[in-house]
Amino acid sequence: MCLFFGKKKYPEKAKYKKGDYVNFRYRDDLYFGYIYDASVNAQGEVLYVIQIAGQCPAFIRDYKEKDVIGLKTK
Image (cartoon, rainbow, N blue to C red):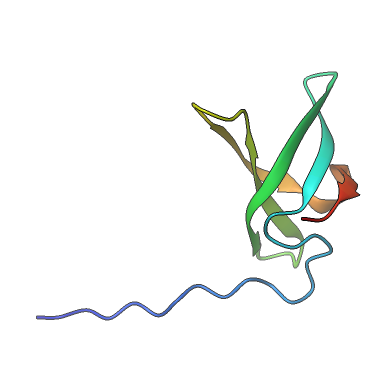
């Protein structure tokens, strides 16, 4: 049996695009990172996956759009 998975589409209603540099608050600190991926949950909110660090990256998943502070685009 062969399963085919379609390519996941980036949400059109997302304010920030993949690769945009952003600031965001996490645990009462201001962090810098960039948008790695986005999705839409059942309530219609856009959730982002934000990558922080460089050589050994960490990912913050399911971060809401209202909590992201835009910085600049690539």
